[in-house]
Image (cartoon, rainbow, N blue to C red; front, side):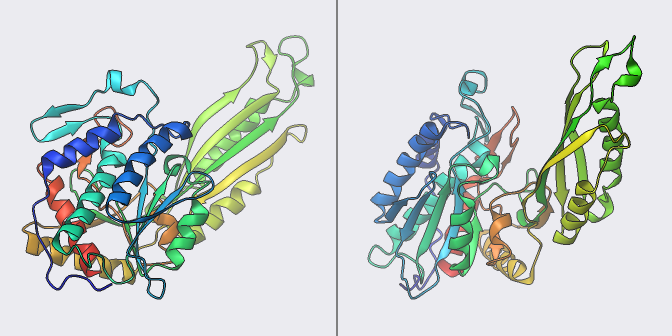
Length: 378
């Protein structure tokens, strides 16, 4: 279906957006509780049905909503997720709270306000042209249940949808403070190094032991030496677990390592080096699991062309817009190698995964207007 001939810059109804956001935030949806996530998805699916979408529940919990899909044309794909990092009961300590131009609460910024803003953009399109509201090829919305834990179940659907899309818009929040869009993200990964040594009495027969902790301590330094922060490669040993008692040579130790890379070449270099690690004491056995989870979202000409369209649209809407490459990953990491991808089109604010999580009510409507324009023009 063809897009409307002239973009509409209708001001979104902030009161209605807040009502919809309250509905989603009040349903706490940690990644560990698929039933709770489904309750959020059920609400969003009702919104989609009200707009005439075709809806599909996919194995593993992902939902797919098609608005005006034309199977002979490529749609615009919009990525969203319903899970949050917050456990049940967080609303008791981080309640929904308005403070002047800020709205606080778990999951507001990352990314339930992004979902709400998207559906208000879709409603604007429907309102301005009821008979033919959707752009050519339609709009496909993918709602994931597990983005915060690595998208294990949804990745296959994300990548399949991206291969058929002419562009991908990600309604994760923009960069905190600057409110810039995201034109690149580091790839993310995780390694677990499990050292198995030999226990012995630390006083009577220390020579009979093979210390897993000693081997792990050396590995910590080796891992950290692989970092190249000047090229965007960082490694952090975030967790160490080992030992059984202070007077026992430790038989076990586990290191959990966070990896961030800007290029696939760096991911391959680090992975090869980690896999080649061996303890100095041959009695200590090392088992290595994990690797790169999300590939780097490398900034491309196609993504920058999308950003430039967004920048021009923002100017006509009365505000300025920048872009950044950031360290955190999103589902856009999966789509960027497959289709032009622009991230950070959700609600401005700050505090992702932090107790001060909030959105900016003074800026949110402008970013919804921007998303509406992009859906019309891309």
